[in-house]
Image 1 (cartoon, rainbow, N blue to C red):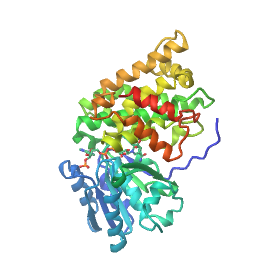
Image 2: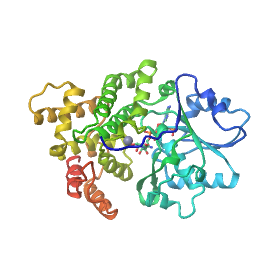
Image 3: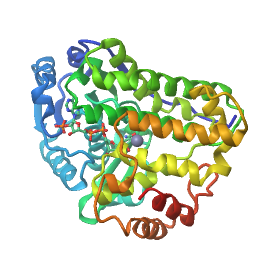
Length: 388
Ligand code: NZQ
Ligand code: ZN
């Protein structure tokens, strides 16, 4: 097993009627920026619950954070915080709002061009240098409620870039599974597939010594397969909802990543598809993931076979056969979850996609991606072209 440090300071509060606890969680006497998205919280009662819980606090509202949050929008919130001396930020929303708040938190006291936070991938480690924040999660998918990473798009240049660091964990996250009842089916489907792929990025590499991490990863995958198709039809079923939501957090709160190699190339390529065509994050993963497993078959086939046997109960023939069947099972599952697994089914005028992505990775100096750094730019091209 590889050496690791496990640090996760998030006070994670899970269950029904937990939003009321905000009054105890937000530091007393703080002036709060309440950040949210396009307005779903006004329709499902979350806004009212938050406002009721925070009676007596001075609150400045900042709405309009987009799905795939934009640097340009977030900088407006940064200005408000600087001008109005706000001491705490509350993110109320899905991954986009939470990620946006992580950027805002980091940018307020940043000395320099704020685009550099994204372009130079500066790590934020000093909690005193960022504005503290908490979250009320409304969409299970990204794990952003319990991790310290974020993804932000610079609209002007169509770049979707990451930021993070140990100072950017939420102080607390309130995760009430009943909030998913108002989610459109498409977003529920996205949540299952995003969480599933997060596990795959950290699991589907090569066989190694971290036995427990493998079993944890497989349990999350199996639970998502068990509840995913039903929860999108029946999000009001608390058993299904609570298991789905907890899987999504567990998939990317750092635990299963400890001591193991990880891949993340599906996400790197997927982010470019969102930046180019605004395809939903999860849908880019469903397009790229299986083709990446095919192109990187020789590297990944032993782990694919383990995944096939343990997660899909494929009885072993040869390693190659089990591995191929496991990829087919994954595609089948994504189709059951409502994904269209070709770029051309999700966007138009896509002929130059591979050139664009390969050029961009070249400009960034990226030579090899994946757990063995052997997903070269030629392989990236092959994966993207296979996905047309
Ligand atoms: O904006 P509002 O009106 O709130 O509507 C949102 C949005 O349109 C809606 N929604 C959210 N909760 C709802 C709801 N509608 C009804 N009822 C509710 N309870 O859903 C839409 C999508 O929301 P968004 O936050 O964009 O979705 P998601 O949580 O999937 O986040 C996606 C973003 O997270 C990034 C993605 O790249 C993408 O930008 N990721 C962040 C990660 C992280 N921080 O660790 C990891 C992930 O791999 C991912 O990259
Ligand atoms: Zn993701």
